[in-house]
Amino acid sequence: MSGLELRELECFLVLAEELHFGRTGDRLFVSQSRVSQLLAALERRVGARLVHRSSRRVALTPLGERFLERLRPAYGALDAAVADARAVARGGAGPLRLGFQGSACAGLLEVVAAFEAAATSRSTDLVEVPYADPFGAVRQGAVDAAVVLLPVEEPDLVLGPVFPGQRHTLAVSRRHPFAARDRIGAADLAAVPMIGAAAPAPAYWRAAHAPGALPGPSAGTLQEALSLAAADRGALLLCRPTAARHPRDDVAYIPVDGVPDSVLGLVWHREAETETVREFARALADSSLVREDR
Image (cartoon, rainbow, N blue to C red; front, side, top):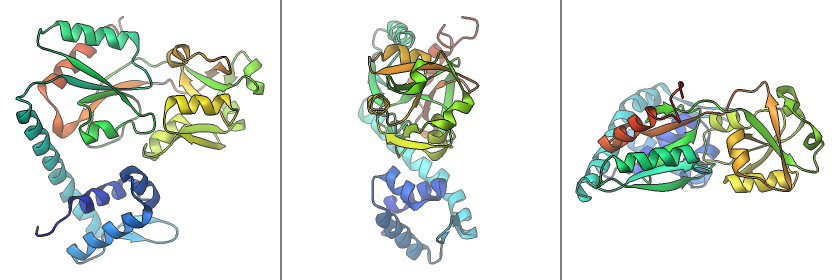
């Protein structure tokens, strides 16, 4: 363990998920060359190659696969130790830090108000989660849990209550030909560049929210994405409630048929789960916002 750098381990874990040096650098906010340096340093410590890279693909070596299997739970335990120390330092108290993407809907705020009212000492801090980094705040401990757009395939995160699906709309410039239509179909998405989330959002998550054959520009925030749509740089998929909360004179929202609904869910870190998080998850699950019989 002498001289072991946690940054090297973190780099390897992210690279094992992305299998791409550029995307790994985006998620870690470092250059691609820095990713290569961190990996090389770790491989020197191990004494063998952990990753096979060529001009066409990146893959773990058999030793890399074995190392990954052993490293994940150990790294999770380190995260849990830090979270435990943070809780002790706060005296086990403090507000629930709840993240949200885009804007917190009225229904979610009602759940928060009821959650706080259930105990006199309970409070909640609301924190906006970047559109282009749905899971980063949870992983970094900036929030205790977050309501984010699905899908979520992160093995270190827990998916709690899931909101009912909402129909999609397509945000386009008022100058776009689609703006005059009452509705469009899934096949129409192939005819327009789709505005997607910038890194470090995972590739599978970006693909789910920007389907279509023509890639468009990337955005870091919802407001940036809407501005790109207004400037006629591409089209943006938004659920109907989000579109209703963000009216713009220069953007038209057209209902889309034939695409999966937009779905939100509550997520938190598996190794930093607290009783407060569990209590809020139960309150959300019991609310009319989530219950199917509402």
